[in-house]
Image 1: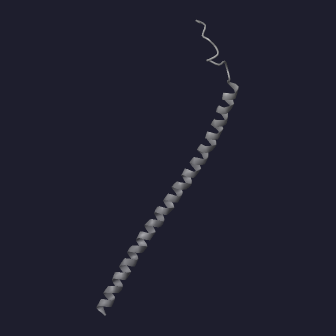
Image 2: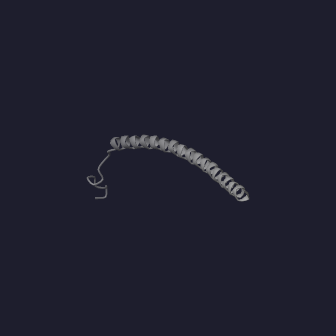
Image 3: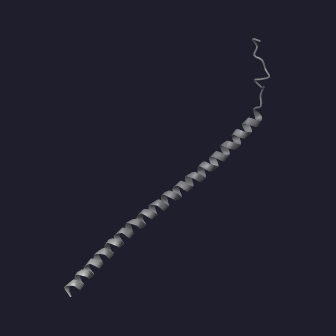
Amino acid sequence: MTEKASRLEELVARLTQVESILMHLQHDVEQLNEAVLQQNTSVDSLSKTLKRLDSRLGALEVDDEGPDPVQDKPPHY
């Protein structure tokens, strides 16, 4: 019977260890999930800003066609 009790205690200890590891893994997964959500929010915000800046830059390029430097000779020629 002592061998059975010893085996049972070993199994209980191993189960406790597995539960502890699982608890830590769940905590780590929750932290990673939170980090991914924050990064997704940042990426969305940066994408919107980039689109806004790209459209403003496009508008500036269309408005600023100015003189062609290849066609215009400098005054000293």
